[in-house]
Image 1 (cartoon, helix red, strand yellow):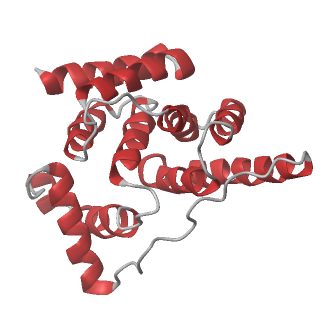
Image 2: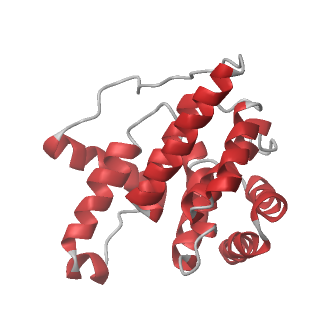
Length: 212
């Protein structure tokens, strides 16, 4: 069902991703607990929080993973057994040149065309990192699908001031990954209700521009 609403689980991933990227630890803890209660597996949460490193840096990713680890232990002490999910990808991640090939293929599929331009010619290292680390190492991990990864990515970037061009790019990428316009409108509403109006406005403006 292409026009189906976001599932409760997918909606729960949105504030988790946003608060982790923003470094809002107190609200992240609450969002993670609500997520674990609403269909988010431990693996889902870990995958989102690891991916934070690519958009908000290793410090916020590591801090967020620490929050999740402590929360799981606390819940276990309370007798709550959370769904572990699929902790490992179903296939090995390519290495070396094969990783660059896989990452380039993933990036092209998600962007809708090969990604190139003056910026990447000016700084070829960042082009290589995007292809190998982000679209290779991360997007080759199939224990969180591309649709959910892009819902999380739009949420992360929307929580960051100054990342508006990247929000716009990933709104379009999310559509290529199978997220519908109606689902993105729902993402905007979740950001407004659960995160803040600034994050919702960034996502909403990017969606309006993409649809125009």
